[in-house]
Figure 1 (tube, rainbow, N blue to C red):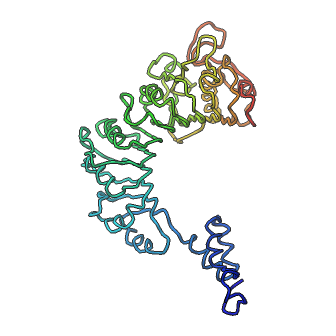
Figure 2 (cartoon, rainbow, N blue to C red; figure 1 turned 90 degrees about the vertical axis):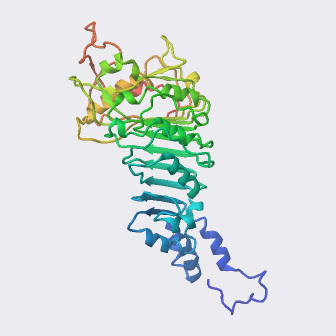
Figure 3 (cartoon, rainbow, N blue to C red; figure 1 turned 45 degrees about the vertical axis):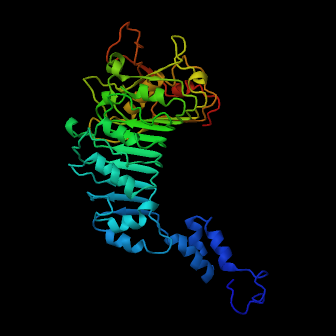
Length: 419
């Protein structure tokens, strides 16, 4: 109802129902779908429900819309907590977004930017970020093109004391001389003591990153096409963050012939004991790099610290609280794209050599399992990455046996998995 001067309790405000104040408190807890319905009740509900509906927390800024966003940022309640910036070579308060950043820079919590110019100096860029956005908690950098001075580290005044999430992405087709170097990532981390989540895509790692990685709870590393750039330093990074890691993802994993995985030691990844790991995800591409054979598998070879010749993976000792295991399809391509059946067979060959190995002990903690589906196929080619399965006594590129897809789930030793 609407309250007006005829309300009988207007002389006794402690007994009166002050509807606008009550409604203002209620709408803060309602989802947008309910807020829209509330605008139809009466004028009081409409006025209060419209405020959060009009509220903007994310701004996507470019050279064409900066003036518009400066205008709408003055509307009551709008606050640029999340911003995406592109096409601006200067993020300082003296740059083209200066007015906007002067007003909202201290409010920004999440920054996503795609703006590094070819002659960027990392010390200047990091200093500008820390000064313009002092309260950042999450930073995502898309590097389109850059030839920076790799030896130039940020000055001491560049401090990211609140940043918990950092993600850096680069295109996969960059030449080596154009790639962002590991030293740049390390220099950022050196001034981000609170970092807990790190994502690195197409960043060549020549060794473990030691700066502020011991407190990581989430780690994602991926690399397109060049399969030997993904595994080399992952083992060391896992070991350094093993005590705290909760969520681990290997992204954009390539597919390669089984013989390469079997013979190429650089594809080995040794899992340390991860006492807090709850989620492991493997996201792999649906294309392959073939040398002549028809069968492919994931371009990584997992081994486990507590494993042995008798037991490949003792779940209770290796991953005592693992709850989720997902093997997912990632980037799609027209370059030697795998069929759904080939994709399934490649996934099974990887799983049989790791998480579904026949010698594994049961995993009582796992409840969520996502693996590729053969989509109605009655048989599939099963091939072991490491040994012959066709009883010919030797291993060759086309060594396989035909199996029923139902056998895959029989390998899943997860008693508490709900499916």
